[in-house]
Length: 389
Image (cartoon, rainbow, N blue to C red; front, side):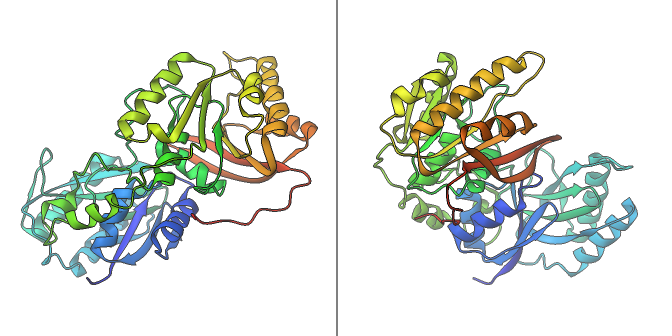
């Protein structure tokens, strides 16, 4: 099949991680833009990305992108590119437009959706159907930049079907997987999440390590409707056949709350990866008792932080136990990757236990910014960036 221009959207600040996943898992070369990653590929590979990629929010058949100063210039750019876009090979009679707007603008998402719906209706001679359209168009407006295209998957792929038992402090599956990419996680690593909440980091790791497609149980995609001339079921079946059924249990999920452990077991079962994860209810000070003989490569977690409900002295106690035990259970090249709102408190304390901050990246979940932080032993050599083995 011919190659077309595609792009994927992801959490703000995570463009480099999506590009890394495209390269290492799917052999797709990409270019980073503000708010999205663009590349050329065929429809079969795009279907594969919708089905299996874990850092992706939307997979778009690209129509237009660029920067703008006013709402009118955005519409003019989209209208111009619509004139050159070949709709003849797509079979549809109804559509809807969805807009995700991030930043301060003098217009809102509904304004964008209404104006683009008008343009598309005139261009394609099709009708707007908000409840059950044949296809969806999606536009992301991030500050002064935008990207617009046909939503190849037809839905927000960052929404995890397995996450029925959530936690208010949990992070999204896309951000959890991005943290693993940030830490150079491989399917050979022994991974521990000591504050696992709803289990998202470990479940994402299990999907990756097992090759089980993230959407194995949810094969409802726009591209499956035949609007591109085929249903792509053969592509999905081929990916299903690559999933492994055996596990050496190298993913360990630990939390002090019995309710959290119960919830994440259920989530992992819904996701079909419960046999790839070892669950245990333990306080952080007891981690060495379970993992002392383990050769842990990576500790990854959304760690607790000082707040109105969690005073500094409690965090210091938790961090002290964690760092002390990390020295016992991590191997010589072991590392720790955490997601923080503010890492300064932990960074200062970690140096007392022989760990240093070696990498930091600002990311976003909605309107909330976080920091990915990687810690390594002071004497450890700089790690290379391994790909999935």
